[in-house]
Structures are given as structure tokens and as C-alpha cells.
Image (cartoon, rainbow, N blue to C red):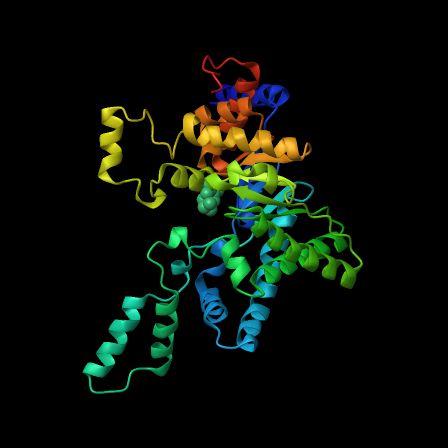
Length: 372
Ligand code: PEP
Ligand code: MG
């Protein structure tokens, strides 16, 4: 076993010496970040913040989204701020000196709201028992019904959420900024980057970025600590890829969210890929592999290429990476090398494979480096 281990270590060393793609990892906890680092990740390419709002904090999110008054909403946000700050401090500490790309909240709304049917059943049960339903339940049902969406994945998520829920993005940015201040004062070298999800139009990113810049300046002024956090966007809608030249005016980096980009390009639901027709499609040869596993070069890949080219034409120093599942898929990594991305970001466990594959891609020893 020892010789296998040292052979792998040598192969990784060799790959690291030749590869041009940087390899980062997706992680959203200090433990995940530490693990990524042990596997050789050169940063966090995607720190999702959705999980940070679950569990006990769900109640606060519910209060924030359904708040009747500004004061109610501000109270919920104020309670969330120190919790978020602690989340980010831990991750920045684990990745000290390396870039950590933190994405602003991007959940489909239904994941946070109480279930309409549950509420309706509770109310009906109380009434059937001849009693009064809980007033809070009635109020909640009313609010949740007003916000109900038939297609939440195409609804109020990503940058849209940040733009319509006052104070949400500002709270997250403040938490990031204060975590950077805390780590800096502790002698660390935090390198936080702020990423805006699900952007389809430069105007959305401009508005989001204005808010980010305002809060960074505020915290910088309050603390006297410089906050040079780059601001960028995910490219996960065809419209974003097709207008990349415009979007690059407001973005210091692009990170391709190929999970959503595959979903929106093909019109396949990423949450239902188990559906029977996928097996039939593979069987009939519509595609050779699920486009959610191996990047579809002709369609999704073409959009990636267009976005890289137009983005760089508009902003030569634009940084580009991928943080969808494809970032850890060998076949797709060869494409990302060919198209000239700066990095791939994948699950911590896939980091070694990604390092090896990026090395092989650089050596051109793959035998399939066609770059349609
Ligand atoms: C993506 O869409 O590819 C992505 C990385 O974001 P998420 O999977 O969180 O939607
Ligand atoms: Mg996405």
C-alpha cells in the first residue's frame, strides 16, 4: 500500500507542476474547508450560504421573509448577522491566505417557507375540532400563499432574492466584511470574494454590486481595515452567457454554475434527473452521458466559450472558473482547460482527481482534446 500511496503522491506532484488550471473546492463549513485544504485545494471556489440558514435559523429566515414591518425584518436580520459572521470567520481561518468565494444566498424560496399544505391541514384540523385555528398559522398561510411559486427554481432565488428582500444582501456582505476585519486583526490573511448568483442581466448585477460596495465601504470606514474583496458573478443562465461582455463590466470574475446552466440550456430539471426518460435517452443515444455529469460541449460548452471570450474581450483581467458538478468530472475538466478557464472548483474529495486531470489536460495526453 505504501508504494501505491507514494506513486499517487508523485503523480500529483507531477500534475501540479504542469497544470495550468487551478483547483479549488466547494465547501461551506470550516471542516469542509480544512478537508479541501488537506486534499490540495488552492481556495474555495464556491462557498454556498444556503445551509447556513437551515436548522434553528430557519425561524429567523421565515421572520425575515414574511416580516410585516421593517422593524420585524431588521430584528431578524440583526439576529442573523453574528451567526453569519461566525460562519465566515471559521471558513476564512481554515483557508487563510487562499481565496474564498462566498456566494450570496441562492435558495428557491420554498425551501425556507413553511409548507402550505401542512398549514392548511393544521388550520382545517383545528376548525374540524370545533376550535379556533392558531392565529399565527392563519397569518402564515396567507403570507405563504401570496409568495407561492409553481416553479421555484425559476422564481425568487439568486440575485432576485437579494434585490427584493431589503437588507438581506447587506446583512451577508456585512457579515463577510466583519469576518475579514476580525481575521485581519487576528493577524491572518483573509481573502474573501463576493459572488452574486443567478444573474441574467447586467442591470441586476449593477444593483447588487452597488449594495455590496456600499456595505464594504461602510465597514471599511467603521473599522479602518481595508476590504479589497473582488465582486463577481455566477454565469448560470443562457442570457448571462450571451451578454457576458456587458456583465463583465460589473464583474471581476465569472464562475460558471454548470448545474443551473445545464438545466436552463436543455430545459431539463436538475432535481428530476432520475426521471425515466433519461435512461431512455441514454439508451437511444440522444446523449452518451447525462449532461448533468459530463459537460455538454455543443450546447452548454458553447455558451461557456462565448462567455469566456466576450467577458475577456470586455475585461482582459477577468478571472474565470467553474463551480458546478462538472468541475470534478475528468472529461469536463479537459474541456475547461481547452476553453482557458483559470480554475475548476469541485467537491473536496474530487480535488486530487481534478489535479491529476488538469495535469493530463496540460500535457495534451488525453487523446480527446477536441475543443468544439
Ligand atoms: C450551479 O448551478 O452549477 C451551482 C454551482 O450552483 P448551485 O448548484 O448551488 O445551484
Ligand atoms: Mg446554481
